[in-house]
Image (tube, rainbow, N blue to C red; front, top):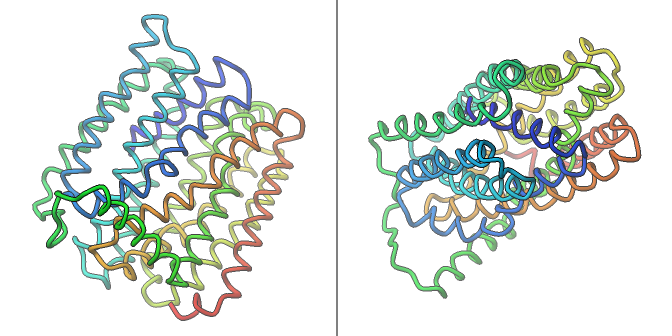
Length: 381
């Protein structure tokens, strides 16, 4: 996780340094969002067929070598934007497979009543590394340069693979077989989509995540520009803003882990979406760096509810033998609006203030929260 944060900050800043165009930042993020759309359903089938633990280990090993392409191409003077797009696409493809396997494997490791706590701990761990990684990445870029950050990222994948190997429980679904025909693969893909479409709660959560992805798309594209041009904080400021968001999510994950099992998960999820939208809108209007840090941290605090409880609800309601397919389908559909949002925000950032675009994003979150709270099925979870 720590290496990923180094990687993200370095990648966005490297791209911006090469081209100086908000549109190219949007294109990088778009290429990172295409694999779920292209391969999500297909990967979901194999997540339900293969040993999920071994699949995660293989993904980490492959990512270790793929990420080394950045510094190798750079030192030979060959690194171009096209290479950044391609490598980003490959890494994202492996990440989709890893995350589908991870989300499907967690319910096999803990009892269902402990899912909220498990996902809360996972989110807490993620945000701790985000806080350290995002802030430290900005400083490391100044000290050792963008390109050397990718060596740290490569090592982090090896460390992750080694750590996963210590899990003793098998990740294979009972009765699963690797020998399936092309027609059977297609049937299994449709089966996952059918369950998602016919289960109202899963469908509502999927729609919500798709809308949130559309609203949050501008964040990765516009935060470097916001930090540089409006807040006058540069690369270090960009890293600290991302750390502020992560710090808020860390505190929020702790709170959700303590109260999430005792409250209505559905309502708590959408109250988090609504309140995040309100504070994110206020953040978009700030011109003071300290105030911006506070507002983005509060936004992150409320974002922890949908992040932790959304996946918990899905893991609890989806049967193990089909969980990989449904989660992959959800990831695919939730990702559908992400590249479009990043491309649109990168385009409009050339003509209007990034603050206006972020304000619109906050307003979309508010509407999303109201939509969820008005649903009857949400109140029953």
